Image (cartoon, rainbow, N blue to C red; front, side, top):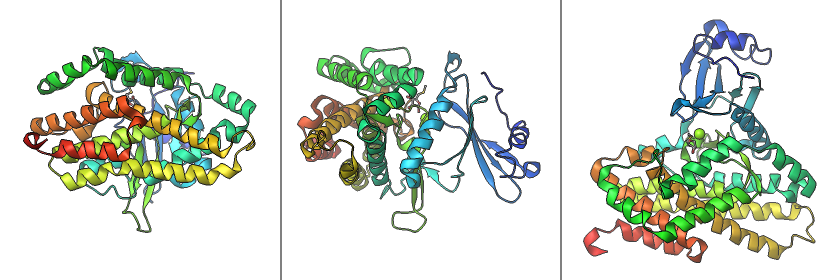
Length: 404
Ligand code: SR1
Ligand code: MG
């Protein structure tokens, strides 16, 4: 059903009409801010005179970034509600809680995380990354351990995967992440000062074939109910690592579907690279190196959490310890490939990242060189190279051009 679009003026009436919500805030004293800065939806923060708040998110029948000329199913709100419930049950400490979901009007009511900030914003202003990514590596492992066939059994797994089909949102990813940056498209753009870099890449058959390989993996691997868009703009953070109020939470999982778990890890890695490239481009060399170290920390956390969950799997006589080792190898290989695609698309494609876009021209050229250069290497070599190799390759790009 096509619902009515909420506005700051109508939202009090909406909350007042919902038995599950009207006791949570005082609608008479409500102040409402529309704060949606993502690419797709409306987001309202509704706070009453006593400071109690609800966060409402409504999916529009089109892509907000582009406008009504790009229609988009509002069912993505149901995909998000479902994944928030499932992921939240597996890792309540690392997932934004869903308070309520109205399927008729495609409205999610979310935990008030207004005391957190979006991780990308923190990183862009030079804030601490310490401890920010490890919980996400653990979350991805919990998702894998809790939604794969090893948890649900083979029949239950197929049923869950069938119910989580998310065709239109997957199509966005197929086009924006795996097709247009490599084969061209009217939605691509870069500043003209890097046209030469892009032109050289487009002639690179290995790079294009690598991306098509990852598109095949994205289309055909059905492993777990993945988040589907796990980047630094889909993470909230509060406080500093080690402090009592430190908190990291994933949100915005409307791209969720049963897909390759390496995609969630790869998107994290690609966005860690964006933050590292930003620091490098601005001459913050130490920070750049320590941000990039988060790539390996994510992997170690993921691996550690998955190994801890491993004894509880179904059918251990079939899925042996040797199977786990080869599965981990496959996941890491996928993660490198997906990370390489994410790095390229966040520079070239429609949905760019502020880490790079807010750089001045001179910094931008350096940032793009790192995103496209390291991204290419990750995509083409994947697990044929390792963390140390990629760290060294990144460090090499930090040297002045004359001394490379
Ligand atoms: C049209 S949607 C563009 C991008 O925004 C989302 O956050 C996803 O990353 C998607 O690819
Ligand atoms: Mg989003």
